[in-house]
Length: 416
Image (cartoon, rainbow, N blue to C red; front, side):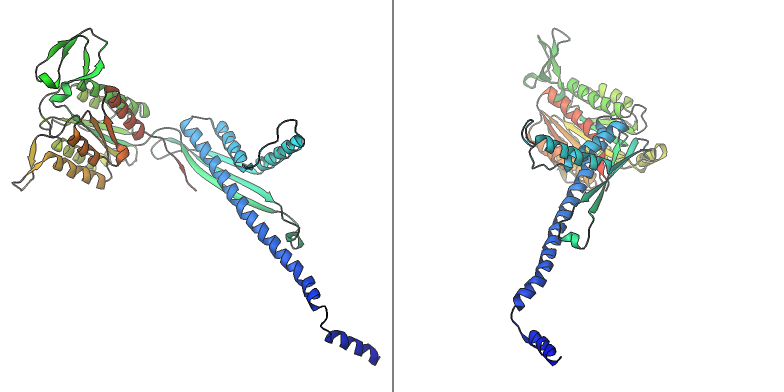
């Protein structure tokens, strides 16, 4: 019996082969750690892919409902297609038809697509916004099983299921409440001809800078700047009317100027009174934009303007000034309480800056204007994208159309 215990004692005291034993014990731990690290990296990667896929699907559905006037079923199918396409491996190139393994690859991809579709739920709920616009809350939730490697399965024998949700909001009707004042130049130079021929008549009296204020008979006839302005304004007002046919959300007015401000139109629902005001404009006189721009700023800033929208729709309006000139200020104005004369440019720019501070968006349009006029309008615009430089009649019409597009733009945004 003593011999047996001696043998055990000798075995315990013998250090030979320890490294092999330690390696045998540590290797599974190292392999397990590497396996978990690989799975963790893959899980994070797949989670990010899945989140991007459901976000893109939600935004695609919102955009379809808002801009393409899809039905709810069409939007749901579009969302599903976006999720599936986003989850396909972008780096893989399908094998050509007839190539060995092409059929198996195609079947494998179809199986993966079906699994994703079966595990994706899409909710599109119609709603009516406070402004009266028709909107949709869109939510996409997708679950994706992710397989684990053999080492991780030593402690967990089933797959990990990832889940991601994307939400968006789509508005299918333009119901942005807005108040807009047009500040329009009707100085004498606005009577001058443009390069656009008037095909409605064989000849007419036209005006040019070289012989202003006299007129001469011209064959062919040319469209005047003031006529082009009226056409451009009509294009803008038509867009607003199309967006708000019942005049529930849009209020407009206009104020014109030459060397002094004309009587301003009153802000009113819809576009009819503004169109009448603009169509009556006659070009003559010098140029001083300061009082007219100031009047527009003050009309939009009145509490009564916000209250008008609040009482009718409960909406908070976006406020706009559209400021146009074809020249440069050549009259002067005195500051209140000061004998120092200041340029009308400075007085105009002062209220441009106040408008920007108060959140009033200012579009500016320079129609064949000289450098100083362009500089004033660039400085007045809310940002460079709100400034338009028109050298031809079609440019002016396009500028006012772009303003109409921007003012009545549809809304699609990611909410989560």
